[in-house]
Structures are given as structure tokens and as C-alpha cells.
Image (cartoon, rainbow, N blue to C red):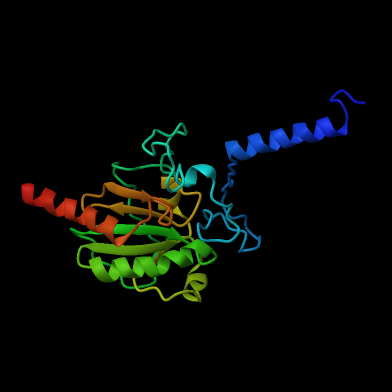
Length: 233
């Protein structure tokens, strides 16, 4: 007989440990880094796809606290601290953005004077960037009079021009030196910033982040706030 009193006792201890772990929940993290040169394009640095089958199942605190008809009060304060919005870049919210730099426009150059500018840092190899294209197309179509939507890639011109993903309706440019991207400290794409006409950042982040999705409603509220501010002036 061993120190734990034999095989049955050891089994019971393992069972208890498993229950404790299950109750506590399990979290995992994905380390993001720049895409190494010469590697498989599918092994990207993009944030995890919330709709991807490879994403871990919902954790305990993603689910409702109590079941239907629970005898307990459902109004309670969770002991788990609320998470702040996660960024894959340096935050520059409410700050003056770095100079808007592009190396070459692959579409016509937009007129940004007096308009909001949405800039997405993206790449052709980025799976999640493909998912955002239809969403950005919608924003371009709906708010094009007030909002200029721009996609900037640090890839070569030919690579972007040969992109075989969803058709892009908004403005596209390249910056192979990644000047603006580096100043903002972007290390995971797609990353979006929205600049007000004065050049200050009023929105930033991964456009598909759960709970912080960049939707027409969000953009509409930003533009409406700008209209009210101009009227007040």
C-alpha cells in the first residue's frame, strides 16, 4: 500500500481534483506574433476566429449563471472581474493618430477632408481579414459620404492585386515599410482605427472581437456624435 492508501484512494483523489478543475473552469491563451517570413501563410498572427471550430468551447463564465426556474436570485455580482477590451496593438484611443502614410494607392486616392477615416491594417494571407471584407464593404456603402474606408497592407503590390478573396469595394493602399502600422504597434491583424476629421482616434481594435464587434450601429453612433458636436459648435 502506497502513501495514499492504495489504488482506490488515489483514484478518488484524482476524481476530486478533476471536479475542482471542472468547477473552476479552464482558460487558454493564444500568443500572437508577427508572421515569420518564409513560413506557411496559414500560420498567421491574426487573432483567433470566434467562429472557428478550433476555438475552445464556452467557459463557465460565458454561460448564464442559473438555469431556467432556478430558486436562486439571478441578480448577483460575478466574482470574476470583467475583462477589458483586448487589443493586438498599442492603444492610441483619443490620441492624435500618427501621420496617415501610404506608399501607393491601388485604387483612386480618397478625399478625406472633413470626413471620418476608417483604416484597417490587413494582409492577403490573413483568414480573419477575409471575414471583415464584407463588413467593411457594408460600411463603405452605407456611410461613404461621411466615412472613408481604407485597407492598408504591408505586402507587395502584386501580392495585393492578385488577392483572390472577397471583392473589395473600399479604398486599398500598400505601405511595404509598415510606417503607420509600426507607429501604432500593431502585432495582430486585422486591426482597425477610426479617425475623426481632426485626426484623433475615436475607435480601435480587432473588428470581430466578441462583445466589441465593429458594426453599422457602432459606426452610426460615432458619426452621430460627430454631427451633434458640430451642431453644438
